[in-house]
Length: 221
Image (cartoon, rainbow, N blue to C red; front, top):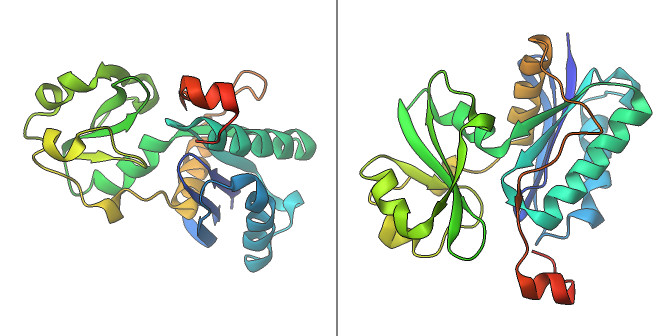
């Protein structure tokens, strides 16, 4: 089978998992208060140990490319790239929205996922069967969110856009929007088997850009 490590650091929760094909071997989710750098290596070592899998047994690494936290995504991407280069294995970039969509599509034929960016804008994706999610994420003004979403189910992954409770009439339950490291790894194994992989040097995350104050004073998102 195909053992794949999954790493998601796009929100204030840090998710890591390992799968063998469609079977999750081990996963963990940590409320890290965005201190991802302090925990990510230990979590990876932990899931590998729990699954009795050596790093050399990995066939690939699936890493969440966002949209998500500027600081968090940089950490996860750097670790994933470093491991992929060291182990000489493929890297698969997976949108945060793709992981959530895989969970929700059996229940909903059409829905929206959103993440705030900055200055009243959000990344938005209208999810339905057959679309390329990574190519379907658009940037919209928050004032246009209500009209764009309408009465369709909608969920905010990680931090919600300003005014989200007033904007969205049909909210997706928060517990259905949490990223699973194991599900990310399963999705990565599926994509890898289908021949999808990314150039390690060129793969970049879809950031929620830090605010001007955060850039000036070096604050974490």
